[in-house]
Amino acid sequence: MINEITYLGKIIRVDSETVEVEVSNDIPSAAPIINGRLYKIGQIGTFIKIPIGNITIYGIVSSVSNTPSQTEEIQDKFNYGSLFLTVQLVGEKIGDDDFEKGIGTYPTMNDEVHLVIEMDLFDIYGKKGNGFIEIGKHSSSENLAVYADLHKLILRHCAILGSTGSGKSNTTVSILKAILSDYQGSRIVLVDPHGEYASAFPDATVFKIGDTVGPLFVPFWLMNFDELAFFLVGAKPTDDQRTEYRLFRELITTLKKRNCHLASGEVNENFITADSPIPFSARELWGEMNWWLNASFPLQRKTNKQLILLHS
Ligand SMILES: Nc1ncnc2c1ncn2[C@@H]1O[C@H](COP(=O)(O)OP(=O)(O)OP(=O)(O)O)[C@@H](O)[C@H]1O
Ligand SMILES: [Mg+2]
Image (cartoon, rainbow, N blue to C red; front, side):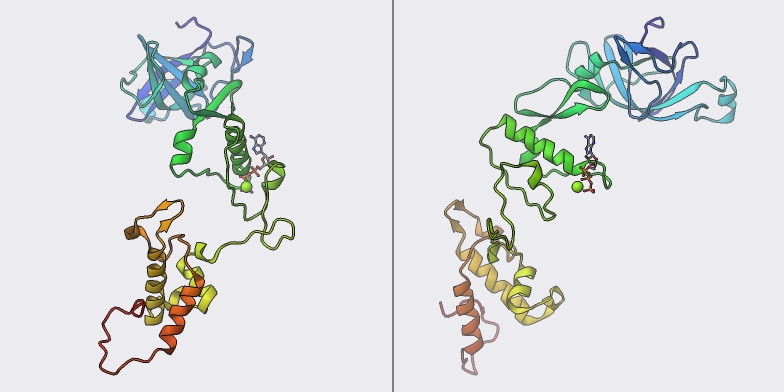
């Protein structure tokens, strides 16, 4: 194994999450070419593998140094100038089974560490399962497609995170294009407040607020309660301690609950709040508000009686 072209070095420290690797001084090049591809040793983010019998453990290089991380006495044993990698263990593959995240067997001191070549990356990333979409190529290999499980992607909440300019919008476009190409006829609603995606989807129908060609109308009932209260009566969220504000919230909730039998299906009214996007009649709301404003009450009327829609 030591003579293999992928041989990188040996393990000199193991803890529960990371291992430290001393890169062998006998490696002829810091950038070996294997099967026509150039690999860079000690690049952060690259994979390494640790074969132990029929188990192969995979890790990702998280830091690189020319001195080992341990105490001075230990450091004295090493020749300075060697390369030391801290590696985060990510998963393992047993025999011909699929790659799995998580570590069942830990490596130990002096275990051999090897470079991960393109073929190994196919084991980790390469299989396109049922319902998977291709979202791009792996940064370390142009031939290696990276897939995402569409089912998990759209049935749960999902976020694409990164610093400014890191490629979030570009990733969003790639994912949507992959869905559109694999699932022809699928419908996607893209809410695009900054108007940056229209050029990426020339076939899309674009609706814009205030546009003469494709004007976008946002129904009033789609607003959450604070927005609606501000829009209708100029209330601010800081007003929420006021009785009128509380009554107004109850009124909106009652009107939404009344309309829980939607054409698209039943909505459990116990889950409806003043913020739920349930259509209701603005005319009815106006009628209720007007009634409360102009109604006369007998003096002995109990004030704690439920105030909502008493007259309906
Ligand atoms: N996979 C990629 N390969 C090469 N260049 C890319 C890739 N993804 C994005 N870029 C380039 O990086 C720049 C920033 O991309 P993008 O606008 O997607 O980033 P962003 O994270 O959405 O930025 P912002 O935070 O400003 O919205 C663009 O010039 C884009 O062309
Ligand atoms: Mg962006």
